[in-house]
Every structure is written in C-alpha cells, then in structure tokens.
Length: 147
Picture 1: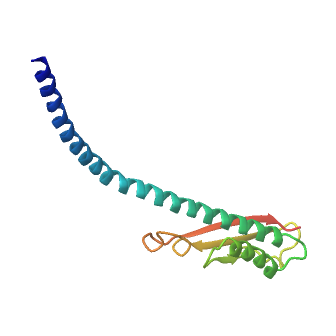
Picture 2: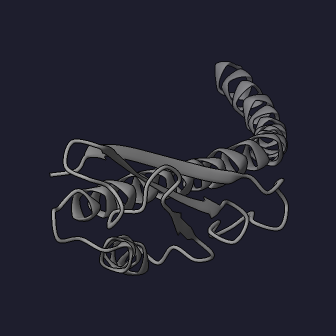
Picture 3: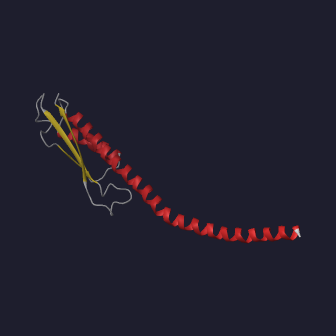
C-alpha cells in the first residue's frame, strides 16, 4: 500500500513538472521578446553617442592644432588650415569646414587674437543612424594670442 502511494505521488509530480517546463519556456520566450529590443536600442544608442563624442573631440583637437599653428609668427592661413585638415583626415571626419572668423593669421599682429573654427555635420559622420536622425552641425572654436 505504501508502495502504490509512493508511485502515485511521483507520477503526479512528473506530470506537473512537464507542464511547468513548457510554461517556463513560454515565459522565457516572452521575456526575450520584450528585452531584446531594449538591449539593441541601448547598444546602438551607446555606439551613436560614442561616435558623436568622438566627432566633437576630433573637431576640438583640430581647432586647437589649427589655432596653435595660426598663432605662430610666420604662419599663413594655408598652413593653419592644413594642420587642422590633417587631424580631421586622420580621424576620418568628412564634410568639415575650417575657417578663421576674426582675423586671418597673416593679417594679425603680435598680441592680437586669432581664432580657428572647425565644423562638421553629424549626419554624414554617423556610423549607424545617419539617415534616421536630424542633421546638426557640431562646431569647435579655439582662440589664441598671436606670437
């Protein structure tokens, strides 16, 4: 009698565990379907944010290097522009513009301010979502005293 009772209890728990396994598989599939898009958006959003930070930093470095070159006493606009362009080309920035909004380096006298402004659009410099986001121009400007 005890033997039969033991087998009946075991048989019932086995049928319940099979139903629970199916239920758990369904729950796991639903959790995966809900969480996957969120994780994908987080990953691609992080990549895009990193790309924009890299672009802004590249513009700042190029503006700094161009201003450093423009601040030298024997500098010309072409040498300062070339210095900034070399930095931007090395960092694979496209569609950029380098300008001197206040004084051209060869017109400035010692002690005057010389500024270099570098800008680039975000849409063409985006690795993933360039066509899906609104285009903005990022600008970096550095001002130095002419030597």
